[in-house]
Length: 264
Ligand code: 1HE
Image (cartoon, rainbow, N blue to C red):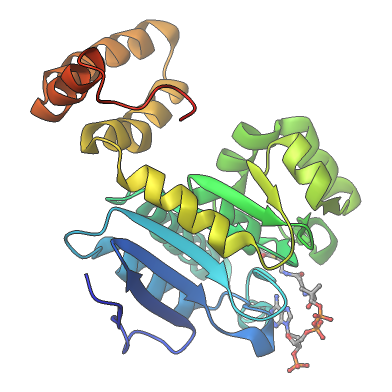
């Protein structure tokens, strides 16, 4: 697929490119530290609702010195309760499109990954953090609560106690703490995040489609289900995945010595 600009008219706050079969989405509002206003969140919803055919994986990263300073606080002050509810639900809708879209998403983090920026990162499937990354939930200090899905997604990554601590005390986590706590899966040097994400995206792109589908759409439901329903869902998706022609040919390749061994 040629490298070209798409979705160019959605919002200047986001740039989108395709390289090989990987969609690269940049938060591009560095003057405001990639603060996420409504236009940007709606832009993400549009992009992740219309992933072009042939794209196998997406990467989200931030231009400038920070991944994202979170919610655009300048848009917050005039909302009443009803508008606040709809606003939070809009974030939920958009970030659900990121999590439950058609392709796995790798986030590349650097600098501030705070508030709504951390909520966006949490909706992605893999997080690569550069060593400049720091994490916080300033909502506690701003007198508000998270509204972009953090209370559901973050405890699954780091546990309820760590999220509670971050909000009660304003604790800022370093990139190293982030990887230890489970916020990111990879820690890399500054400026090395995008290259690492591309390497991961290429691996993801080579998986059987049904494997990626199961990881994105079935595994989270199994995790949310009770043991009994979870095990049944596992059996059903295992049965479907192994029946796909791609699975059969991959198994044949292994049995006949053509496939890579683990770790190769
Ligand atoms: C912003 C925002 C923003 C910066 N909304 N405009 N998030 C926060 O509480 C984080 C607030 N931001 C910060 O703590 C700092 O900006 C950073 C640590 C992220 C970066 O610091 P720095 O020194 O690089 O930048 P700066 O000088 O603070 O900011 C540069 C500009 O960006 C400045 O605007 P300017 O017109 O004066 O140049 C800032 O006002 C602007 N800016 N962050 C709006 N967040 C779905 S609910 C989610 C709820 C939340 O996310 S609450 C957490 C919000």
